[in-house]
Image (tube, rainbow, N blue to C red; front, side, top):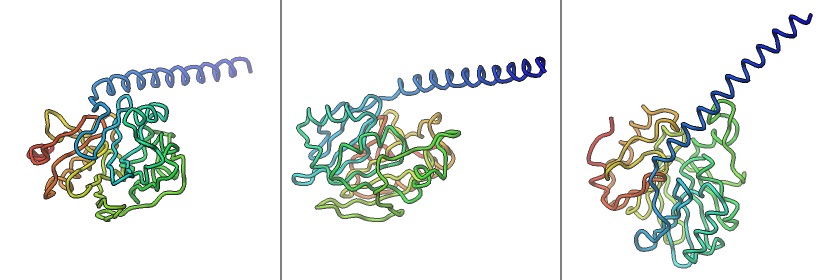
Length: 248
């Protein structure tokens, strides 16, 4: 009996050690990947469009009269609150949050925006309702169950702002980009930017790279667009140049 117990303990110990090594490896890979991200400092990028920096990720705000529409909601509530205060932006004036996807570094500060309606892609709901895991047994969660689902190419009018949701799956199954007033394209993690050109999303954090590359066609031929904004790699004020080369 003692031999059996000893063998069981050895097996359990071995499994725990392997699991620990995997987690340590994941942690250092995670740190390495985010160290290569280059986000925009908190500022007004162009008239009525603001970048808000939260360590390795940006959220964005579009101003409409006295109100704001947010694209994503940051990684750290305290940081976001501090950065908004620097810009004299009242969180209660944020009337909508458009989530590009459900990862925690894009949703953490939702509780700040208590007056905002929350929108996300219908295809992304699977990532927050327990149906589809982000990583092994890890599921994304939102701080609210009160959200509005959007379909591909659906257009919203919020105040004087026109918004079109464009499905760009790959990073997550329901990643959605937002075209605002036909001028500003917000892609979240669906794509990166490299030397002013659209690039593939970060491979380490993305689920389906082949689908992500195909999604490029969904945003590569939009008329009148001027700016393209990414969550982790800054922005470009030359959309045509950014999409001038195909992804491979």
